[in-house]
Image (tube, rainbow, N blue to C red; front, side):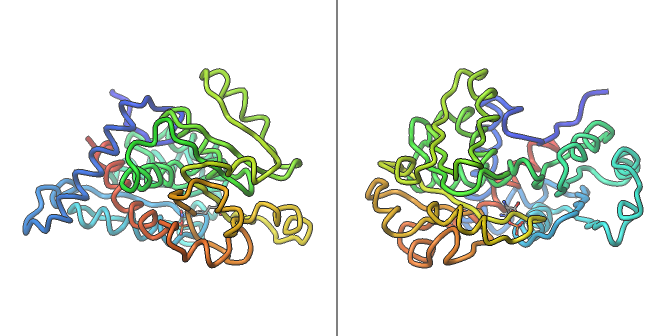
Length: 306
Ligand code: CP
Ligand code: NVA
């Protein structure tokens, strides 16, 4: 039996496939934007159902996948720990086997990346990673799409990440190698992710790690940050203090290129990782970025389900 087309992590794909997914996303987006009365893509998912498993909260991922499936003519079923047998200990393997008999694809948001792999290993239908503690590939597809809509190809550009070295940052590392842009990552010394360098070097790539936000942002085409406290983490004063020098404020942003963009996957915490004047200012494209979750994921759905 052919293997289902899973969308697990950006590092698992070659550039051609990633570009194919983004092309699909762009085609579907422009068809609707052009106001066609009966977009051809409106039946792309007809008769298909996506199951979505949420072991963590979500606004964008949940709504964009649900609306995306419906706009393509399909259906969704949402499962959480509290309303499914997952909460009572049914394994991912058994859940995968059962859901595969009902639905055409499964999206999962979970803490442990091993659960994603277990699901994919035992599912007969495509599995999509909707965020784990170690990556967020759907977000990166939307982010690359957003940058390119505003500034053209991301290849050869310089992207600065400043803040926590979290799941989204790791997907930025994967994307930098696959899409061919320079990434500079600034974090407090204790959080610097040296462990990620092995993969980067094995791929023949380069990643600048620094504990100075100014060094990362200098001359960058794009500045990105994210929450200091990812889902599941407890707020702590020590961490607030450690991360404060990595906040994106107007002074830090001024070190980037004059036409640099600002991105944040959201939800944002104004006054913590970013100041209001930056996220609500003219360089910020966070609302386009959030919208593109919808379009990028339609490309992913179309690719996964052929
Ligand atoms: N950016 C993102 O994934 O948002 P949600 O947590 O709201 O899905
Ligand atoms: N790093 C954040 C991303 C939220 C979309 C988290 O995991 O909570």
